[in-house]
Image 1 (cartoon, rainbow, N blue to C red):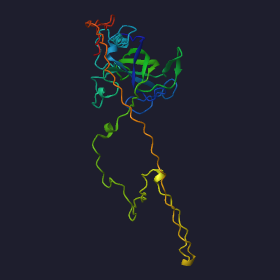
Image 2: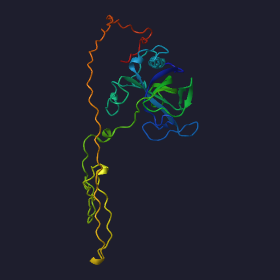
Image 3: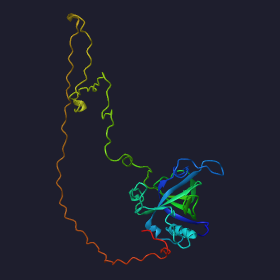
Image 4: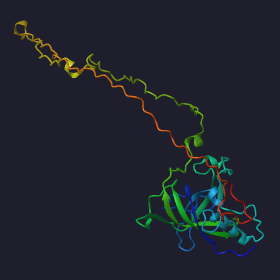
Length: 322
C-alpha cells in the first residue's frame, strides 16, 4: 500500500438532501455506535461534526475532466488509487457515496424512495471544523450564517483525500467541505421518518382499560349545548325585517284598574318601488365572417445526430455512473 497523498480540491454542484444536526452549528460528534461524545485530545472539549449529503446528478458525473461538473468522481478514484496502485480497491473501502437508484439503507428501504436521491449519487461531505457559507450579492460573495436549508442547491469546494485503516476502522476517503456557495432554493427536505414508517399503516389495537371515546366520571350528566331558535326572518332583506319588540314593563302585580292601556306596534309599510326605465332593445348589426390569412409553414428540418461533448470521457479504470 502506497503513502497517503495530500488530497485534491474540487468543486461540485448539487442539492443538500440531509444535514448533520444543524447546517450552520453542526452536531456533537460521538464514539462510533454509541451516544458518548468524543473529546478532543488537544483542547479537552467535546468535538463537533459539520456536514451534509450532496446529491449530484449522474449525468453530470460523466463529465470528469478538471473543471467539469463530474471532476469529483474522477478525483475520488484517483485518490483511492494512491493507496492501491494496482487499482484493485478492497470491498470494505469506504467511498463515501450512495447510489440513489440501487443502494438500500440498513432497514432494507431503497434510497430511491427518499426525496432527491433517484437519478443521483449522494456524497457524504463532513468536516470537523466549521464550514464557511457564502451568498453572491451585489457583485461579490458575502459570508452568511443563515438562509440555506436542507433541500437547497449549492456549489461546494471539497477536499478529497484517501486514508488507510484508522484503528479498527476501514480504509476510505475523506470528503471535507471547506466552503459552500448558495445557488438556489429547493423544496425543503425534513430528515425524519414519517408517522407511517414509525408506527405502520394499520390502526393500533386498544390496550386493556382504554376507550375509543372520552370517559365521563360517574354521576356527571353531560348536557348538549342549547340552541336558540332562529326567527323566520333571517333570510329576508333588512327593509322586510319586522321591527324589534321592546320588553314590556312588569305590571302583573298591579290591580286591573291600574294597568296601563296596551299599545299596538305600528305595522311596517314597505316603501313603494318605482318601475325602472327599460331602454328599447337594440338589434345586433350583421357582421360578415372574418377571413384568416393563410399561415406560413416553414420547411421541415431533419434532426441532426447527437454529437457528444468533447473532453467528457472518464479516465479508464473506474466505473461511469449510470
